[in-house]
Image (tube, rainbow, N blue to C red):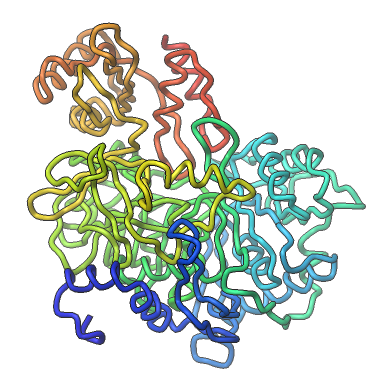
Length: 623
């Protein structure tokens, strides 16, 4: 702020959301984003705020800014990537080594006829090759299609077919809790439905026997390893497609959020710099999968800032509950990103796994994926962080390229809260008429475009407009409930389509869930609304109990009374079901819409993102 003559954070927020040319131009300069040919204008809004064009006339490739420009500098010898596998394998790549490996992969892709504009999928575990492949696709001007490593045949086929993918990177399999999870068989089955796909490149991760089809399949070590380690980087327009990330829809087919070279990576790096305060001397570990936006976000953001990323291919509590903390100690992690659901799971193991490790390298925590409730937040802050490390809340989405709201190091924080919108994000909380509200729950909206905004849904512009721009003219409606308190701190209260309305009172699931998980016998909870003839909706809850706890009517009634005492008798849950697990994505987001559909016997829509689909069957059986 001093550099730009701004005295307060409020001054920065005002100017960053009212003078887009100045702010995003300053971001590009501060991040030292280099262009082969300069842009003539930061943003062009002539087609409306829904369709901005950024860095007009600019020519760049984001891989140049991640790797190429590091060649011949001291950063070339700095570690860019640390990898650990569940079985204990550790690999490290410097910026220079990563540049050479990416160049080999780019040469390999070109050698089989792939190039600018070609869509190429990534269906792989979190191993170094997935980072190399992602960057190699971008280096040749291709379009990256990140796919969740837990997807089944139908989900992969639908996404590859929609994007008209020409190639797919995969692996023979990966390890999870000591068992081999087969990937190649799933990839084979999916590729059979994609007529445009001609190449399948396979990493030998586990050594398990797989079938290889001579006309299509190639081993990574045979195709890529012999290639030259220098390769030209394709010159792309700033707004050329870089990546399509598919997000699950509540109905219909998945939505392909389109991102560009000057969009997603710039927003990722900006959020890391402005919100997480990540510096080049730091190691960031964020528990994620490359199929979620936080995977590419991690890669692009860290490399643009010249920092170090840790990736881990395995369960965070295997072979022992201290695995996560062992990773932090061993690799001197400074910034740790995780979800509230994971924290709740770790609490079950007690404090001993933490006490056995030196966590002094940690400077900060970060969290995304779902709202917090107080007890897990306070456990992370006090027990793990010793009451001294900030927890930087982060909430946005795939279509955002990162965050709308986030914590920061300039403003005070309360448990579970956000400092407010990120610089450049003209966020607001509004009522049903689109009017700003404070101290009450409203819709989270954004009133101005930003550089990371998706350039629409792949081949479906009308669905993009209907999803975000159809409610209020010129205003992005994100689909989250939010609130701002008297101190100006923000709270995200869950998806607006998860909201429960009991006798006219709007209730966020997190309000009920926080009360339930505060009970010592409850480790996880999900609340949904179900139709009720008298009240419109009633509350039904699903609880996962702590180790050793036994379900029963007495506990059920105790929990109902807790909710009634806190929220009022009219909001007493109609029923509480005890289950072994809740349906979650790989990044630990609880899927309430799927729970509700299972409870009501409805079609749950797209369930391909679930890590544990068996949890849905258990909910059905509980009925």
